[in-house]
Image (spheres, rainbow, N blue to C red):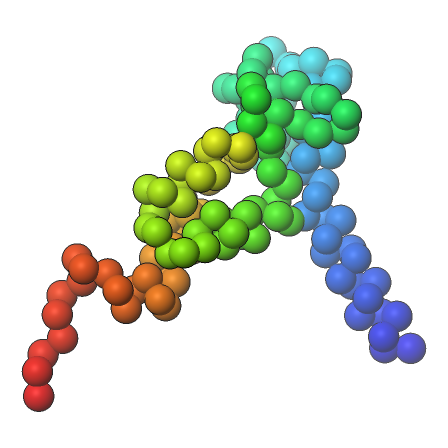
Length: 130
């Protein structure tokens, strides 16, 4: 039935978004190659931090911060941005607990696209009066 197919597709999409963290855990366990060129594109952003990464209870950490799976990153930004306190505070809230490559870019993009934040942005040019 079409319900089974659509639920299978959703599960497959979720699994594909979780794979980078699974690959990363395996790479940490196996040890890093001598050069980032030996890694695939998914793992390359982690190479320069390889000595800071660890796995504990199937969770991947950079120091004390949890490496967030790709599938959860947008949701984490949304949760950290509750209250619409802006980009700097959203990043600070996330950095207390989480890390992932490109976190700053994702926060910038998501917060700037927030309708409520755009409407209350004091740096935006005032609209012309009719």
